[in-house]
Amino acid sequence: MTTVDPTQQRLPISFEFFPPKTPEGVDKLAAVRQQLYPLKPEYCSVTYGAGGSTQDGTIQTVRAILAEGCDAAPHFSCIGASKASVREQLAQFKAEGITRIVALRGDLPSGYGGFGEFKYASELVAFIREETGSHFHIEVGAYPEMHPQARNPQADLQAYVTKVKAGADVAITQYFYNTDAYFRFVDDAEKAGATIPVVPGIMPITNASQLLRFSDACGAEIPRWIRTRLEGFGDDKASIQAFGLDVVVDLCDQLRCAGVPGLHFYSMNQATAVKAICERLGW
Ligand code: FAD
Image: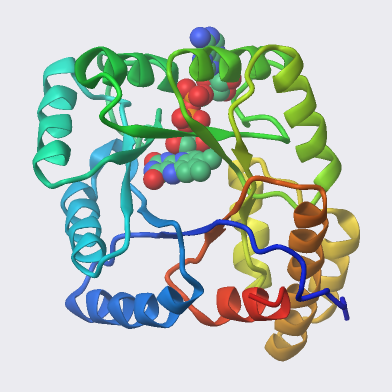
């Protein structure tokens, strides 16, 4: 078990939620947020479905978080969108009092047509800046282990630099369990002129089969030693969760000791794992 010095400095943290699909899910997420607010997040972000499919749920959840007195950022993806629809959406965000956005390209749902008027997140970031100046604090995605569709790591890094230069303020990474990939990415990005803070995205480990399936799809590597341990636990949920907690606390502690600018937790709309990690970190 990792022993963490609780006197070490606390980092800014943020939580990511997805929009619930049912009234019960809405109530459950409201209860989860109440459990997480005592950890004093800098803000909470709310994901956006492929092709904008959960747009209403995203804005409703953001509205609820703002009404609870916490800053909130909708994720906003541009794939399949027109400039007119993005302009309209930005106007709605402004009218709702939203001042930060996680700006993404997104992924096309199967059966969806073309790209629309935006091909890459960098074009969305540039458009938001052209249309709204410095009104929004813009977060973008970063991939220390390379975006799965990129030609190669160099091309992906160059795409990231373009996105940063288009006007991003902060990057949030895809989750990873290999700190070397993160440190290398941050170094390379800085050398290439992209010097904005890169906040590690942290995925708690609570469900082995879901994590392994999800990671294959989004290109996040589960190191062999973690994969084999998880597989070895079979259906023993308690052992998976205890091991997962150790691994993720250790990861966060290494990142904290290295001076990362913050941690963004992929909560999966659950409070228990995130709370346990933060408690073990002494927060
Ligand atoms: P981009 O930065 O546009 O990159 C996409 C691909 O295009 C990369 O392979 C890149 O190398 C390449 N590329 C970029 N610019 C160029 C260029 N000029 N020339 C050639 N190649 C280029 N998805 C959702 O649908 N909803 C969400 O809410 C959501 N939240 C996310 C939150 C975070 C923190 C992260 C890291 C990802 C999230 N995603 C979400 C997933 C994301 O939408 C996908 O990973 C998507 O495939 C890429 O989005 P992006 O904004 O990183 O794209």
